[in-house]
Structures are given as C-alpha cells and as structure tokens.
Amino acid sequence: MLAMTALIALGWGAVAPAQPAAPRARDLGVPFDGTPGPLNAITDVAGVEVGFRTLVSGEGARVRGKGPVRTGVTAIFPRGKADGRGVFAGFFAGNGNGDMTGTHWVEEGGVLETPILITGTGSVGVVRDAAFKWLADRREGRFWYPLVAETADATLHDMAGQHVTVADTLAAMDAARPGPVAEGNVGGGTGMVCNGFKGGTGTASRRLTAAEGGYTVGVLVQCNYGSATGLRIAGVPVAREMDLQGPCVTQRLPTPQRRGGQLAPVCDPRRVALADAPLEEHRGSIIIVIATDAPLTPEQLKRLARRGTAGLGRLGSILADGSGDIFIAFSTANPGVDDGNWHQAADRPVQVVRLPNAAINPLFTATIEGVEEAVINAMIAARTMTGADYWTISALPHDQLQAILRRHNLLNPPRQATPGGSGL
Image 1 (cartoon, helix red, strand yellow):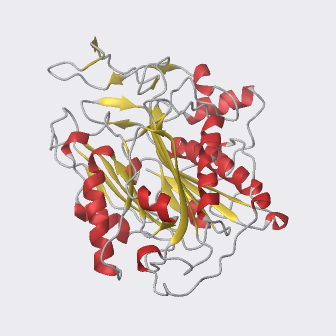
Image 2: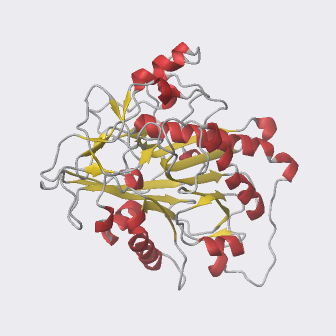
C-alpha cells in the first residue's frame, strides 16, 4: 500500500486554469433531443447548489480500513446553503435494491427540508449523521431527516473500510456552489461504474419553450448501473461494436486476484476493460435527482420522478433485480408555502401555485431527456481508473463512440468543450 496519492475537495467543479475543460457528450457530437439551459446542469434551476468531496488514495491490495480509497460525497442544496426553506418533493424507486434515507417523511408530508447527499453504500450512516450536524449548527429546529442516497463502489474501493468521515461530508456541504458542476470521477461518483464502463457523476438540463411555460428541469445522476451490451446511445447498442475485454487487473498480487473462481487476466492496454464480462447481466444502481422551477405539488413531483425510468429505458436499462434505481424530484417554486416540521406560520392557510396536470407533459419529456443526457455525460467525463487489488475499469472510449455514431449517420459535428461540467 502506497501513501496517499490524491485527496481532492471540489466545489462546483471548476478545474485548474492550466487544464482544458473535459468534453461532454454534446462536445463529441452525441445527438440529443431538447434544448438545454446555459450550463446544461442541474444548477440551471435557480438556487440549486452542488458541492463535492472526492477521496482518492493508495493503490495495490485491498486492506480493510486502509484502502485503496476511491469514494466521496456529493451534496445538493435545493435552495442553496443560505436558504433553509423547504421544497415540495416526490420520491420513487424504479427498483429498490438500494437506500435513500429520509424518504418516509417526503412520502408522508410531500416536503423536503434538508439537502440531498449521495455517497457510497458503506458510508450512508456517517454522511447522514454529519448532515444532521451541519443542519443543527446552522438551522433553526430540533431535528431533521437528512436525505442520503448511495450506490456501491465495491469493485474499485475499500467499501467495507468506511473511509468517508464527518469532516468529508461537512466539506462537501460547505463547498456547494451554483454554476458549473463537475462530472465523472468526483464526489460520491468517484468509484462508480456505469454500463460496464467507468461511471460516476453526470448532469444535464432542459429549458421549456415560452409556450410551455419557460420552465427549467435539471438532473444530476450518480451512475453505477447497467451492462455494456444493454447500453444504448442515440438508440445504438454502441458497446457491441467496440473492442472490449472483461474484468482484468493491471498488476498481479502475490496471491493472484480471482473473480467467479477464475484467475483475473492482466489487462491488455490496447483494449477497453469492462467492469463485467461483455455478456454479463445488468447490475448496479443509480441515484437520480430531478430539480425544476415549475410550480408542481408533491403528487406531481412523484410523477416526474417516475419518468426517470423512461430516461433509463432509452439507455437500455431494465431496472434489474440487483439494482437500486432510486429517484427524488423537487420544485423550487412556492417558497415559504410549507417548510415541513419547522414551518413558522402554522396557524394560517397558504396559497399554492400549481400547474394543471394537462400542462405537465413537456416536463415529463424534459426529465426523460435530461436523465438520458446526464448518464452519458457521466460516462464521457469519467476517466479510466485502477482501484483496489489493481482492478481496472476503462472510460467509455470517445474515439470508438464517435466512429460508431458516424457509421450510423448519427454523429453531430463535434464542438469546443462547454462550460457546464468538467471531469477528473
């Protein structure tokens, strides 16, 4: 085990000036429907702030409690750190093999009173408790039900070592900012896998036309689900046309690594290394956070959250039995109407602005399109990573993806990298 190689604390995701912005899916020419906001990020919804704490250290054999570490925390504030007012929210699980704390009260009362945090499976408890501390230190009230979600970074990270600390969580929350959002190997998405390739954090947004109300829908995903053969980009099963290899290691340990009883091969650097065998079934999880400024009430936001399944369906997901596909949607409209447990004017009725259900279809479409693009942005921004026990997972190869889309007459002209996101 080597000493710490990197410890990265990121706010809204700006990279050092000397580094070029990481390309996003549209920059490569991947075609999408719909019109994004100026950042093509969840922060296009006014008030939303996002922060990260990214933990990367060590290499070599996995030793519980020592590493290697490939994990982190993502924090999302619906109205920003300075505004503790609640938001109407709705929760939905496409497949429930995962965890998102705090959802009982969202289901019961329709109000989200806390930030949303996302991390690895082994760190939900400490992140939840740290979020409680952050709220207790800064907000009026006696108790909260922090909303903390997870996906499993078990392949690349010493997940059982529970390396995320209270300090890491507080740092992610304090780092939250509006503006561009980092993507790929950052925050809770650091050690994640998406459709067999290196995955992580991704974001996108859609802006409705004036005739549709001019509202914005923003999406952020922590992507750790799916199979390579099931993946669809622009409707094409792109991985089936790539030069792929199954799970492999960059270096053998004294006790050689095995998977499924088989000796792990050493990776061929000329080929793409998948997390799973090319024909292995869909597995893993995804957390989807959907934000909008449209005036929707909790039952409508639950409907919006359900549309995350349609976005994943475009990408080839089957919401498999082993997957935790868990979605939360909130609206920043109607500020101060209901602040949940700590509403100040509990003796007076309030007036709620609400779209009629007949007007909601454009928001469904925007959600589906945003989920699809956010997942692909996560994969485009992610970088090849070697983690615990030298297991290596390759990034989605940009050149092969472009060549495949070009063969299918689907590639748009590539363009200069946009400012909406950056990857590490």
